[in-house]
Length: 414
Ligand code: MN
Picture 1 (cartoon, rainbow, N blue to C red):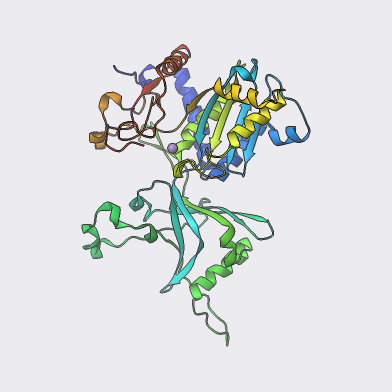
Picture 2: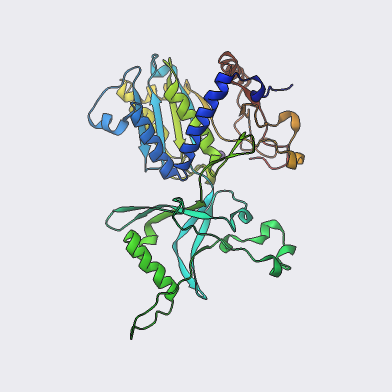
């Protein structure tokens, strides 16, 4: 069973539309490197498209009716978009959920130190990273410092063309004999991923006493000048270290996009785009953009929280459905795509794929009926009736799709 290659079957009109879409997607990526930035970008985007803030509707006791568009945010890190359908919500919603956090290095609460004339920021990695990929790269720092008085300072270092970048050093090849003997997983420990943050000592004038850690002192002076922050303010900061630079087209034929954070902004953007551009909707349609997927969907902003249920309850109440039973019925009658990336077949690493059940570049979006590891453990296995329904929807709308498992059985999984 072969799936068709989109490049061969798309009309010129569809190819042009795709180019337009990918340009917008790349712009979205460039402004969404962290979950906070992504949440902001989404809110700015949908407000222009006539979505109103659910919190304001609740405050003003306003009603929602068919055709209305509404959004809700949670702790600046998660967003729900909703278009009210023609049918009552109790007949169920169509939901797409994606995550807007991505693997990265988080700056620790007490990060700044100096060692032998070099200032470092200590990090704790977030999500499943291959540590050796993060050394010798230009890195940027994105995030917020929230001071004790509640004032938030937004920080972004390394993205403007005139900005400095930061980096993690690696050993020069000439002195790497012992290092090169190590296994890749042992090359860089989690504690070895410290950011090089400076090495210029503060110079004292005249009789002034030299600082003991003059490089760190100079960094602290700059932080104060630039962001009005003191060392203690790191305690209540969320600073995320990510690869610096913009999304780029890749390949001489420009057939691919190379960028940080496409897991899972590729799904998030597709869902947002679909919701914004869908014509009249029979069923209430929801896009859930969540945080903390990379570390197990935990915490107040992950899918383990009650943000989704609470928000749907509020939206339902605005349409006149206030009872707890109504909420149960809405949820039970709903359909959902848990939308995330799968593994794309890579000819250079063919051995971890089972080629009949792999996803290929250029063959359309991919559905995984289930994922999991070691006998589907930890997966949701979509029932055949639902997969049949999804196939029918895709084929009727002439959307190219393929199906896959996440690699060979027992090669890993997830
Ligand atoms: Mn993902």
